[in-house]
Image 1 (cartoon, one colour):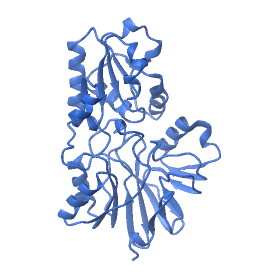
Image 2: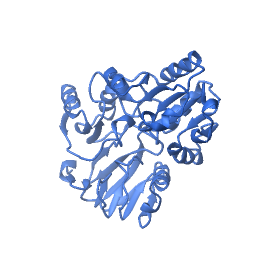
Image 3: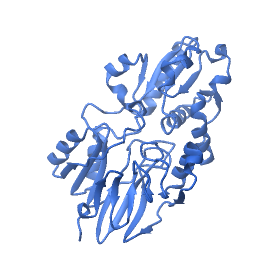
Image 4: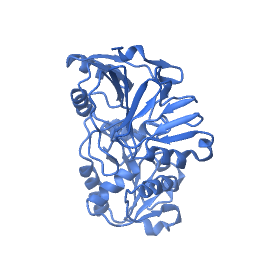
Length: 339
């Protein structure tokens, strides 16, 4: 039984599976790619062929447009197995964003699972993470330090609603990444009974449209730019993190500036960013979830990438796993605020 380290290797393009002749989330154009999810640090244009979930392909098409022309796309349905060279590949839910998947590769009696980005917390907008037993588990470590423990998202959304009730004359503008975070915040608000219209920066509307087309109901959404400033008092506006600090946000009525990110656990980050209402909501696993996942997949060997690698490697070793860093470059979830 060949160990995965003999058939998975890091190349300049990314993580390469030799017996399958494909890359997972390559950072440069390659002939064949398997894509874990549609964030642009994992899904890039220019590949000859792409295998991904139906939802990821729909999101890629929306975000890339003509840049995806010339790429042969193949959806892999839940539970389906695709023969790729001498390997068998399936996609297991990762719980990160809509369509996100772990890449499960079986070859000659051994199995490797490449997690991509993932979380274990419940999310009404995407399928829950599936723990897949394997010989090698490749895990992210975005929040791979003990300080990062994410509270339930519902509690953070109650903080937002409480602030809206306390300051009905002000507009609450929340920085949220376009893919995944925006839709999760909306769904969490709806689950708490918030049925009012939610206003969106124009950059967030196309991805929300894909979510709704894929069956994720988001309720009434309105473009913020087409709404009079006076009408936004007491309303919730979602915008990309970059927009809440520029001229776009100044058009709002005495805005309460909020940010939804796992990095809001670090108070100095919130203070430095001028964030009045930090909301700790992340689409990545926190420290307890990372450790729980290592136990759940029970892989004797752990490869750690993009994040606080050394902290998670140390903890994995203490738990009896063999662990090492997998030096992949080019993955930052499109800016730290997105986390």
